[in-house]
Length: 211
Image (tube, rainbow, N blue to C red; front, side, top):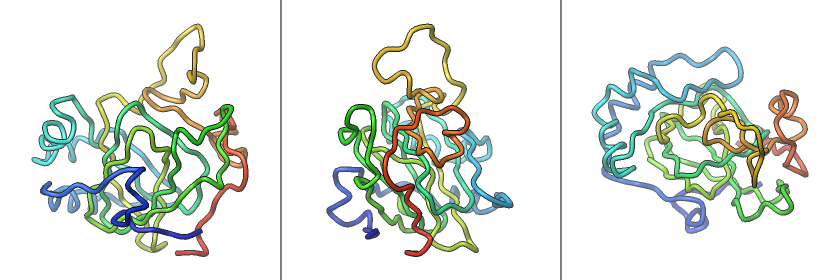
């Protein structure tokens, strides 16, 4: 799989890079959080990160005054496993270079997505990336197995928390895995074993030999 930079034109349908945000304090605070012993960790909202001045910039400038949350995904990963989408953009910035495996929502056909459609994009350390609402994404991949990855995740307040209860399913509600989180799982993933809808066909992409 070819790994393309988010600064290349190929990234334009999936998202864009933002400039002007003061991220040094955020990156330092993220770097102080230890990596998990194995796999990945995720917290939708981390109080120490939301206490930083940049949190107000995310809420006011990035989301136009909408209430947001600032959390983090961190650890080590090289596999696709799943893809998710929200009803809004997500902002990411990492302390180290990381790779996003992405596809487009319109590439879902008859409720499934062929993983041959997935593209890989490298995000340089410190670059703030907006991932559009129509872009399918999931856990980042590291570029260095020793350093792993620490990636901030900015979303509207409440996203990725407990799944709402409803009695009837409409549209894509069967894919709803958490609040504002629609999930397509590969059969090989842990999420599929936990009951997530298997909606990714083809290879469960692993980029460990390409980094």
